[in-house]
Image (tube, rainbow over all chains, first blue to last red; front, side, top):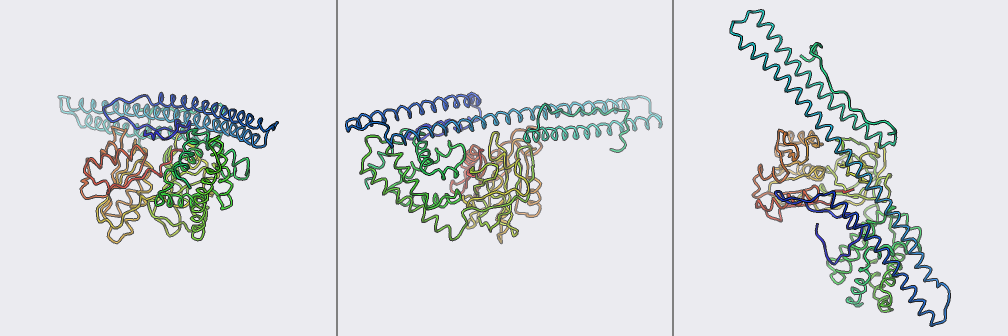
Length: 226
Length: 371
């Protein structure tokens, strides 16, 4: 972040401050903390400026009254009333600004949280996918080793059996992969739906249900994937 | 007109910071309620913009070479907001009232005269530029959405068709307003060179909590109407340079660079172009299919995706700067960079460090919408 010191800090400037990420190898500071701090400073600054403005107006009003008093005028002067109207409108505007900023902040937090959860779900699914694949590979390797290590030359029937077994395991691993891919896709879809539902305001009590993880059963016939 | 007196009186008011534009706008809206509809509900950003613009005008008040083009641009730019010549005196009156208010007892007739004179000149330069622009261009271009593709969770590609011909140079960007977020304009780059059918693509990345980006990606659909301001920006292809080109894109910073590739394709003898498309995870390579098609069609184009936050990715991993450093000899090349401000700075610094001449590095973070 670069600051021109001639510039007065405004609440908006504090709120929208962007900080340059620290260079590699150095330790940065907690971004959420910085953000929260800026929010706090911006709120405080806004209130102080507001107070300052009201006091300034009061000073001017009193001074004008004093000067006018010498001229023998009484009651609220039109210019005075106009300045007061400006102050009232300014305060209303600041309230509106605050509401918009709060709503925006809330939606930012929600979106950020949803993004984190999405990444978590996808990562978890990825880990599970690689675990299932690994298992399938281990089983296949074991079967292959068992076949190789058999001292007796295999009979043609045994060889055929083993080859069928290996082919089956390969297919099984393919099925796992396909199922997992489908699982990941349906996860993404359900997140999309969740998001759309939220966006359309139709999300009532319905929470996103991740689809069931695939459990391909070895007894199922995987012929369609061969 | 006494320049020193003008600057002093402005500095006295400016010391009140945000209160100054707050007072100014309230004063304007009270005296001319019809002007309120030209602004968004929240005025916080607007106030910062006004104070910055005023500060710049006052700082450069005697430097006409810098001031006049700035004011002309401002005058043209205000056309899309619906600003008319008739609005200028109203703004002038509220500006004077604001300065008088914050200068308190220091305010006098001489100052009032100085400011009236200065503002009259400012308004004249702005309105003249706006009037000259009226002869050539509409105040804004209405456009219809003809394509809307959600490429990833966070990125949508929008195709729009302006009602009237919209001329621009590839690499430029434009302020966009959609009906769901009236009076909020955000800059996006055209992602293609001008086409015969007049359609324009925009790449929209949803910013968390962003008001306009999320509306463009989610609320807008085919048939929706948008408004575009005048094209602007200087990240355009230097066709006089005979050097080869490195393009560094961070996420949707790809848009203007893709337009530049299409621009190069239209040249008789295109330079060799190497595009590095940087994203966090491979799932965010939202436009890779199209880029690969382009690379297959044009032998002078190479496309390298760079994935920074997915160690198991099988291609190039690291930031755009990392990948460029590893893969591309930079001597005698031009570079064009677009992405988040942090990505642009980091990449430009690295290219400079690797020996690229600073005036060969073209940079833009203007088209990067943060909301």
